[in-house]
Amino acid sequence: MKNQKNIVQYSIADDLGGLEILQADYKNQCFSRHVHEGYCINIIDKGAQRFYRSGANHLAPKNSIVLVNADQVHDGHKATDQGWSYRAMYPTPEMLSNISTELQGKRKDAPWFSEPVVRDAYIANKLHHLFKVLQYSDNKLERETHYLRTITELVCRHGKYNKTLTKLGKEPRAVQQARDYLDDNFSTNISMQQLADTTQLSPFYLARLFNKVVGLPPHAYQVQRRINHAKKLISHGVKLSDVAVDCGFTDQSHLSRNFKRSLGVTPGAYQRMVRA
Image (cartoon, rainbow, N blue to C red; front, side, top):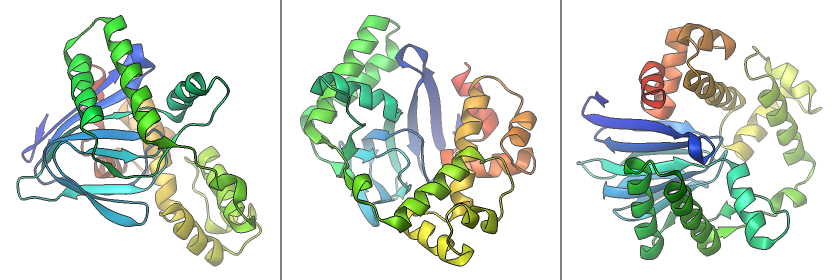
C-alpha cells in the first residue's frame, strides 16, 4: 500500500501461531510513542532509523537489528533524508518463553533484550534469510524450521532474563495494579480517581508515577491497549464501526486516527493486508 511515498505491508503467519510480520519503506513516517503486546524484532534494510527506547534515543543504521521488548515504550522516525526500510516481526512473550523453556529444560520467563540496537552480522544474515523464506515459501516445515532456528539463536546470543520485577517496592507494585486494571477495563471510560482507588494513591501522584515507570501517561497506555485489541478484531474481519465501539473509541474516525499514529496505516488498510 502506498501512502505519501510510504510503502507498508502487514501480514499474519497463521502457521507460526499468528505471528505478525511487517515490511515497510518509510520516507516520512513519524511514529508517536507506543507499545506492542509482542516484541518488535526488525532488521534495517536501507537508510537509518532513530527511535526512543529505555529512556534514550538510539540510531539503527543499515543491517543493524532493532530489539524492543513487549510492552516497552518506543517510537520511530527517519534518521536520513531518504528515510528507512526494514522488515519486522512481533512474536508474543508466550512464543519466546516457550523457546526459552526448550533451551533451559525448565519453565522460563520470556527473555529480555537489554540492547536496543545490535550489530551482529551472523544474526543479521539469519534474519534476512528468514524474512525471505516467510515472504516467498509456503512450505510450513521450512518456514517453521527457519523461524525457530533464527529466534533461538537470537535469544541465545542477546537475550537475558529481567529479574527486576521481583525487587519492586510498594509504589511500582501500585503501578502494576493500575496497569492490570487498565488491561481489564481498556474499553471503559475510566476516571483517574477510579484508577487511583485501585492503588490507594492520590490521582495526581499516581499519574506522575505511572508516567515515570511506564513511559506513557495512563490515558495513552489505555489507548494502546485499545489498539492492540482492535488489531485482533480487525484481523478477524469485524466491521470497523463495531471495532471502534467494542474497543472504547468515540467513533470510527477516532479509531483510525489513533491506529494510524501507532501502526502507520489505517484500520481499513491493515484489514485488507492481513486478510488478503
